[in-house]
Length: 255
Image 1 (cartoon, one colour):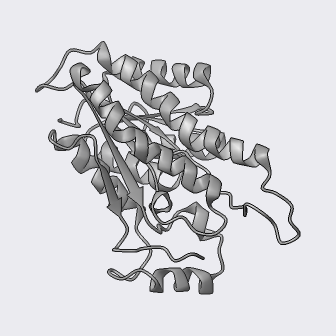
Image 2 (cartoon, rainbow, N blue to C red; image 1 turned 180 degrees about the vertical axis):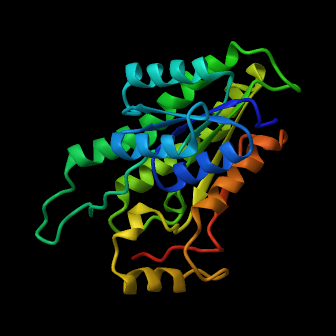
């Protein structure tokens, strides 16, 4: 798919992996709709990318009405042919605390609601909009979801997070099959340890230790590398129904 001239809707687009992806796609000639709950950061980043090239829409990805509004805003900018799900939360909690107190059920539900339900909510509504477009070079659109290496190597305290990301991995192939006749591709990226706002608040010694645990290259991932992979997925029409790990050969230990 040619990126130039098309519109991309990017959740979590105000920072981290989403912002890096938006930058890569704008540089490739796309227009972007940044979807995020952080209005100040989103508006500022949209202004940085340039009027007419980027628009911010404050959106809770778990809300059907808010995502519908974001998809409509994307359609007003041009043909929505790319959707990238980067919105997510990474709160950690053990199944049992040391005193025997169980995992907060509302917290578990909230993580699933944002990471899994939110991803599918954006996917289904973006796919609906894409299905109304005329095919170009044999396809109508591509949807890229974000899972995590935690879907495969979940650590202590990641029961909810791993379950949410495992759900994203698990639905990749069936959804790609669902949308095959609509000529819409679905891919998932499972990032390792990236230098995003989730990690930037950690002490430097912790960040250094995390980087040292990555085999090669032995450093934190650069969000621009994630964005470059999204660009390649969009442009490579034979990539469909698969999960790609981007992690420097990292396999997470139990803790």
